[in-house]
Amino acid sequence: ELSRSKAEVELLKQNLISTQEELAANDQARLRQKLEQSSYKLQEVLAKLSAAEEEVLYVQQEGGERELALRHALGEKEGRMSELEEQNKSWKTQVQEATALRIGMDKIVAESNARLNAALTAQRKAEQSFDDLQSTLED
Image 1 (cartoon, one colour):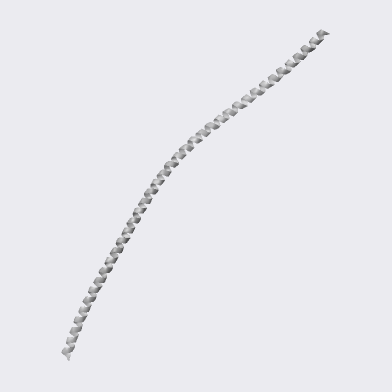
Image 2: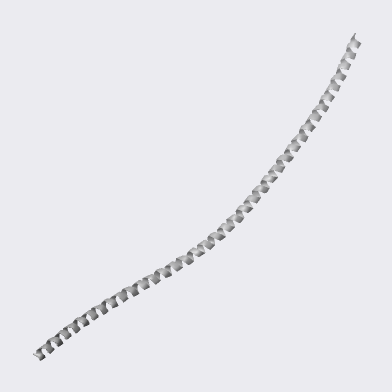
């Protein structure tokens, strides 16, 4: 009976070892499968990350080019604005000079009109005096 129990224990030990080996083999297979799945997922994530990095670089480059173009356009606009400001100053100066000339002309015209009126008045008086003298001579 003891030897039979020993044989059963030995058989159970062998079964246990065999089961443990099977479990270990199954665990290794599952671990390999999980490792392979994780590896594929990691490759997918790395590919997405790489694509995202490329997109960021493209956007940064495109943004840099747009910024450069905008800065260039702004520089041109600022240059044109300076030109227009200078032209505006020149025109204001010309308008001031023209206004001063106009005021001077208006004074000259006013003086000429005053002299003309004085001359006409003197002429009328002279004609009246002549007419009076002629009338006196006829009498």
